Length: 256
Ligand code: PGA
Image (tube, rainbow, N blue to C red; front, top):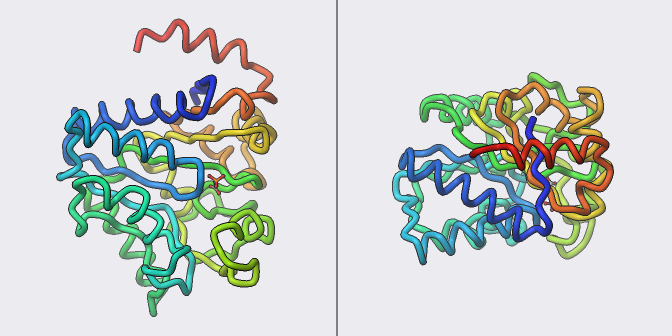
């Protein structure tokens, strides 16, 4: 696990975008795992800027989103398909047929989840998985006590997650109770994970995920088992890390 502390969210987003852009230039048909929520927005903004100003080419890139609300059609204002369309896909030259988001309206959940997993494998696996972290430690919508070996499936959202996400809906009652999400095992199978976390509300959970025990009570702590996981966080989100001086030392002595 590598912890990179940046002064501000824009600095962190620029660093993450630089890593993604380098990977796309090295492998134009990169398979990119994507996240929703407020945290990755600046990263998407920076990638859009790189596409417009620096010719970053997404034409051969394939994307897989982590999760989707069950029962929301793709054009619902709070669906993750619509979020991705508005905040990222419509601004770059991705091929629409290579952008995958779980289908919240599927009539056969079990089969759809299996097919999603198979599709990821048939594309060669996810090269870089972008992640946020929920205030309860979730990655994707893998809520506390999710199996650390889980694969794409239906999950019930915690009340805390529903409240955290109510800002995207007209009322709390409208927030779905269930979702489809890649599992923790799916996320761990990606070649690299880039987790972003900003702000003081994430400080406790970042410290628990990085420095606490691996436990399904903090699903993001499973990333301690990943061979190439980077946490890119701003100063407030890093505030509770005990080994902060060490992380800065590692970064300062990293030739890359
Ligand atoms: P946020 O959500 O980026 O809106 O804080 C993160 C998450 O729930 O994974």
